[in-house]
Image: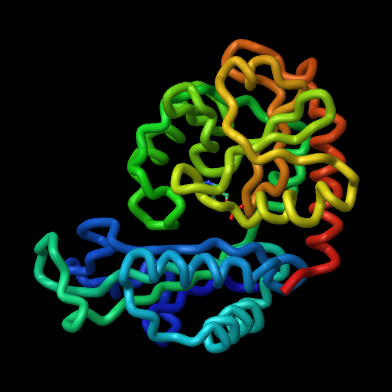
Length: 285
Ligand code: PMP
């Protein structure tokens, strides 16, 4: 088993100095990315991640140079050559290399593609099922966080603040509305009904979120409502959880100073976590 890095068409050594200092991804965070889970040696929900990646590129006006089939094949090659069974693949496409200037000239830029495959500590992932602590922080991001760009400064600052307080991550609030987590989506359970922020430009339309909404919750007969809810609603929720590609469904058992669902993972949350794990074992293209 070997972690691998691939840059612009070839494998490179980990930490290789291959990126130009004039790469706009490096200078401006002018790049898009995806993180895909590898489960039992197969990508989980890769077609969903690719759809989101291509959408991010369209929204960012980054030309698409690779067909979805070729990109899919590259994922397979990385898995095959690395022999990694449980891990994740990171893909990043920057706008290209040019002397530093804010405005870009699309015709003169060649997008730069980085891919890497890494192992995951599955014990750590399993431990998330026991529940995590979160803190509340203001959502200070720009108005288009539906585009998955590497320009993540507010997320980075929020995540660091959370970790300094020994929290797993932060729940973000914009004008008192709960948008999402610093690195994940947020769901609340109240009176047996599941709530999450609508997929507009104020949240990232998480793939795990989509799995919960379109597959797991319906299969368990759990009603889901996509609507805005405020900090008071969060405070009074019966259960709270995060979703993301790496951790799946992550129960929140403490928010700021208060215990959530009695300080243990909620029953509905755990059913959803189990449902997602089952789907991941079965696999999904
Ligand atoms: N929101 C944000 C801000 C994220 O960074 C992520 C991914 N880490 C998510 C939501 C969850 O998305 P996904 O389920 O596709 O990993």
